[in-house]
Image (cartoon, rainbow, N blue to C red; front, side):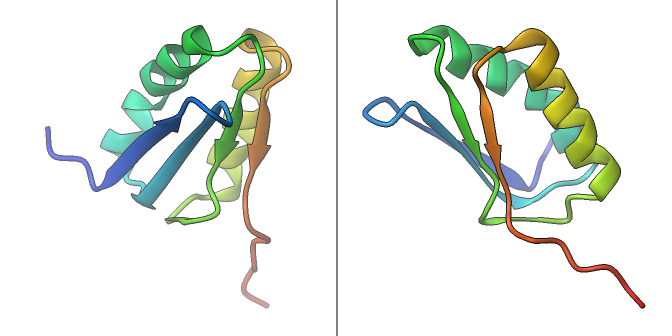
Length: 85
């Protein structure tokens, strides 16, 4: 499976940076990436999506919900989203 996104975990800041374009294959593997990063932290993880593209609002909402339910204390950081008028 060839996904178009990349992930990088910074241990100094407990930040998981997800970059690139997110397609359906990428979203299928996000949970594994978050789980791996969360286990490496002291229960304080930041997920940085500011350099990611192609994130539908619904998917972002699902990600925030997942983090609230499964990874307490996790912060999801994303850029402001524009909608078509």
